[in-house]
Image 1 (cartoon, rainbow, N blue to C red):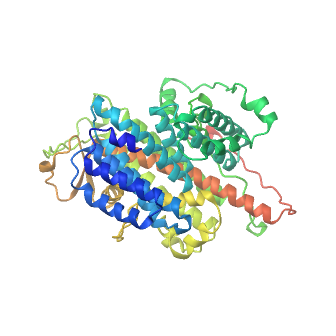
Image 2 (cartoon, rainbow, N blue to C red):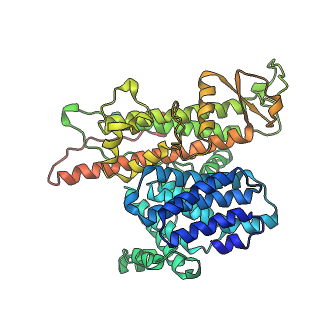
Image 3 (cartoon, helix red, strand yellow):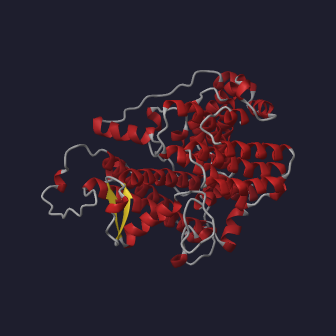
Length: 503
């Protein structure tokens, strides 16, 4: 890492000096000095001139927090993880917001590979394997033979295979995991972590020789399916390429037609016979899925707007308020989608509260509240890795009235403000971001490019949450059965809702 920094003419000398301090104190295992260097690095940020320097300083801070945990694992604290994830995201957000020259990009990409990979490592450790997979892929888009990202992506796919209760899906995850682990070992020069190669080899050793020879080493046979007529095909391809199907297969490293279905469902659930035939969890999960899919389609439609005015927008008398506000059916669809997606977190919380018997009164249930006090302890004490993932997703959101630093998303306040404006005030989506044109004190102004990005990110986050919810129930049902190995469970049939009934 130091060579990447030392050879970079766009990084200011003060940043290079801080990075050297971090490296030195890590070697010395001096946590106190690492913390002092973190404080110095934070004080330095406001005085930096170049975006590349800012990317590196945030990355160095995030890495330093990880070093503290590596030196002293017993000193684990939630605050350290929050700081680590937040600073990784700051580095990524700065990169996403900048337009670098070709020469600058040559010096940015080396660091970016490390940022994406280490951020993914931290996400995976927190139980957010779907988001981790996304960032390992981003690292490999930059350097396809980066062994650390390949190997850790393989580990993620093994974990995903263990969590997915569809055996066919698990086998495909195993197939991808095996390929990545093998190629990672062959790229030894890009594996910098001590003992990583041995660990990757141990993971390959989990597969039996017969399984390797008869499946993992053979060509994967994939059936082709029709995606429908042109309009439907365009939609399904857009969903698939954006990783938005409620289907764990949409997290694979390739896109094939068999993925283009929202096949995610709840597993079989053990219920008390005194409750009779009751499909309440499946009913609520149906509604969560349907609202997500509706919001997703509204976003797709909103993004299809061409150069022509929609017929529904014609002959509407509106006043030009001279602040570059966009008025259209297209923008309103995106607003409706945002509101629907955000509201799904209360439904997910409602499901978790009832299913895991948290005992919060219905009128007080919210996604924030289920992760507080006793209910948080109940959920996180269950050794259910997907509940961990759902908990860390809660850290993506800004909490009203909480002035302490408690989020891992730098733009969390913007998400909160958008939601508040859409529900209680009003929001102006603007073509341009011109500060001196913001004269409406009743409105929240948000540039279209920012609103589009935040809506897409919220869509990915909700999809991730719904999948974790399903897998968390699966893990909990397995735990129930393991406690009563000799119990006999009468089956209640589950009937699929036919497409012909969806009128």
